[in-house]
Length: 116
Image (cartoon, rainbow, N blue to C red; front, side, top):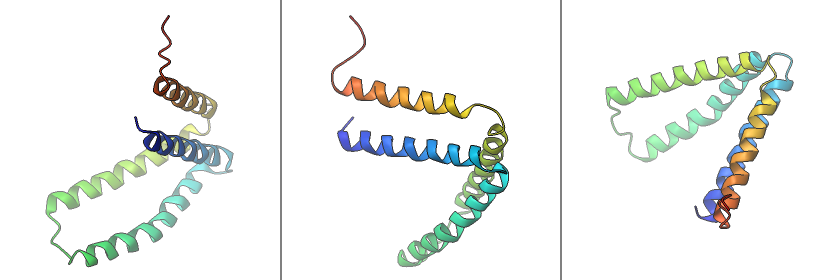
């Protein structure tokens, strides 16, 4: 894996873990997740519409609409389940797993395979 890709994966892992910690630390994880989804929609939708207009406003096939709606529904379910799970003590396990994966990948890139 090129170093740039590894750096992007590491940044994504840190952002993901940070989001889990923010949810865990909030008084109401579900309300925090809803605010984040609504707030990000106010940023993402205008950018997407702008890109669509710049591309000439091509017709969007019905299957693409269906996939988009299904994706949004699954994302909503994910956030609800994540917010529910934040009531448990799972966050340290997630952080530990993320650190282990990143560490393994860094070692592997440097020729360490873990075998004798």
